[in-house]
Structures are given as structure tokens and as C-alpha cells.
Image (tube, rainbow, N blue to C red; front, side):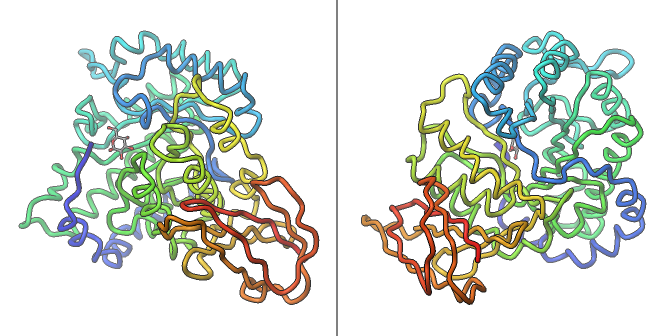
Length: 403
Ligand code: GLA
């Protein structure tokens, strides 16, 4: 796990404006070459949250099998992404090879593709990844070409040890210079990916440093992590998810805020809390990358990950990230066709379920509204003025409303 002292975060968060100026020239090229590979938020699976460094080729094959068999692929979960710990050594020519857990990456990619899925991988602009494996520093073109030869469709590019190269920790370093170096490193891999002529979704992971949402598109990113790592607790998930309020103007088709992967099904939260993550991520138009062991899901986990009505909110073609309309936690997301998704969260950690009242006027409705409950899968008929619901502790009620 990578640690980021708040001192460093504070130091760098203040330099967004300068950074935007610094990258304005390199951004022009990158933006022009954006490949438009993510018109809706990417959906799939990533190995890290459950398997961490233990992931093997057979886990990935089993995931590809089950994601098709259980209906997840058809619900939209298309990417099967290996995170950190696949990397082996470089040969005399500098070509990266997978380690013993992944004997044949091309064969694995072919297998994933044969299932109608896409294949993702992970690296770092630094010499080492966060878990200490081989990074892409100095080998960007070569690695991008290797990924393209293997058949990679998605790259998560994680800052990790590049923090030392840019001297992120060094008080004598000029923060503007450090930021320019970071952006150039991300742009460098973007160009390398573009040069392969293979469409590869480009996912930035640098934990939101320097308001990455302001410059991510200029270095060719399709999505960017907005926060530090999530963990499988309600506190971690809620802190990350609810802190996304205000970032909505930076997201849209082909450029998404990424509040990290799903923890649904990993065992650390209650079903109501996992429903909160799924609902909140959908309201945020966040990438939906399942992070659990798909071969061992109970029915509740399946019902959460495969709630197609909630997925439809996430994947709505307008691609508008929802906003928080009212404390404590009422969120609204405009949908295509004039409907609105509304999520009412009980974020207050009371022992009791809380009644919460929704005023339709606060959501921009004038007359009576039609409503559907997206977790109960039930039409609520026509409602007038307001709607009061009991929201379970740590849970959510999610509605689709239209006039
Ligand atoms: C960082 C990232 C995580 C994961 C690990 C892998 O911590 O933020 O999502 O990729 O590295 O080492």
C-alpha cells in the first residue's frame, strides 16, 4: 500500500492553476488525439481489491468464465483487468516479461477476448510499481508495444515510485517542476499508447494529486482516480464516495472521475452499505470495476452488482455526474429522456433507520412525478409534493423520477 502524507497532498493541491498553464502546450496534442474509448464509464473487474499480489493466471481465467456465465458481461462488465503483481523481469533487450504467475500473457488475453471481454493491465511511470514490481520508467514505448502485442485494451498507470523521480518528497523541489514532470510522464505513456494504433483505455492513478480532474484529459486520460485507495469498510467507502461532491463538472463521456473500485462482496460491509456503494458510484457516473472474487458470490452480492436499473443510471448516455442537492445526503443525476435519478442515503451512523423527506420542488419538479424504486424494483405510482422514506442505517433508497 502506498502512503501519502497529508503534508504532501496540501503542498501539491495548491498548484492546480500553475499546472494547467504548464501543460497547456503538451495538452493540445494529447486532447486532439484522444481516442474516445469510454463514452460511458468503464465497467468490468479488477484483481486488486480481493486478490492483491496473489492473483494468478488461473484466477483471471476463472473470472472471465464466471463473468460470462453469471450474466455480468451481459449486464455491462466487459473489462477483466489485472492490477499490480503480474510483472517479471526485463530481458537483455529491455522487453518486459510477466512473472511465473502469468506464464503466457498473450494466450491469456486471447482467452479473455474469446469470451467477448476486454483485457486490462497495470504499470507505473516509475521504475517500480506500488507493490515493488517492475515499472515502465525509461521503457514506455517498448511496454506500450508489448501491451499492444499481447492484446491489452486498458492500462491503469499508477504513479508509485515516480514520486521519487519527480522528488515529490523533497522540500527543495519546486512544486511546479514536479507537477510538470508528472504530467509529462503521463503524457509520455499516452503518446506511446497512441503510437501502437491499438485502442487502449488510459486510466490514471495518482490519487487525485494536484486536482488531476482539471488536467487529466490534456494528457490523454479516459479516467483518473480522484482519491487515495479505498478499503472494504463503510467509513473508507463513504468518505471517498461522498467527498466527490463538486467534481461533477469535470466528468462526462470519455473523461471520468474515478473514486476507486467497488468493494461489493468482499465481506467488510453490510448489504445495505454495499447497496450504498453501488448506488453512489452510479450517481457519480463512476467506473464500475467489481473488486471481489466473482467465483464465490452469494445471491445478495449478485443482486447488488447486477441491478440493471442502477447500472442504467451509471451508464446513462448523457454521462452527467450526479450532484448533492441537499444535506444530509440527497443526490440527483439527470438522465436522458428528461428523467432524474435520486438517491437518498442514510449516512448518519445512527442505530436507527432514518425517515428522510424528499421535496420534489428541490429537484426541479413542478407537478406530480412518476416514481420507480430501483432497489425494490417497484413502481411507486404518481407522487405529489414530497416523498418520505425510511432509509436503513448506512443504506440507500434510489428512485427514478419523471414528470
Ligand atoms: C496503489 C493503487 C491501488 C493498487 C495498488 C497496487 O495503491 O492506488 O489501486 O493498484 O497500488 O500496488
